[in-house]
Image (cartoon, rainbow, N blue to C red; front, side, top):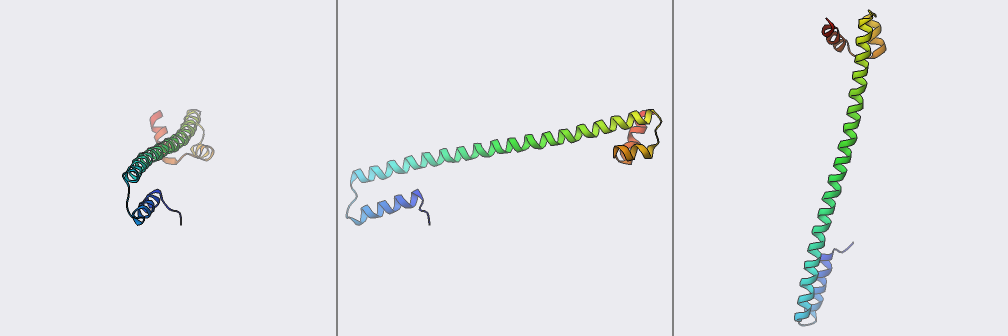
Length: 113
């Protein structure tokens, strides 16, 4: 089992108490170590939070790019479908070649009229 800094400080204090008396220097050392540890722990916490934020931002950006690409593909397919509709191409052929839904194609047709 790995000891934490708190465990080590508690053990150190117990050792000092077992030897008879804790000197003012020992008390000061324990207090200084505690203060340093608490400050360092807060720094680690802030660094962890910042890492988490950065990871969240990166994941969000990746997801946004993927969604944007997908939307771009859909818009391109719809533009192709509109062009084919204007040329009088059969609806079934448009559905088959573009892969868009019949509902979407109906909306596109109604927008043209």
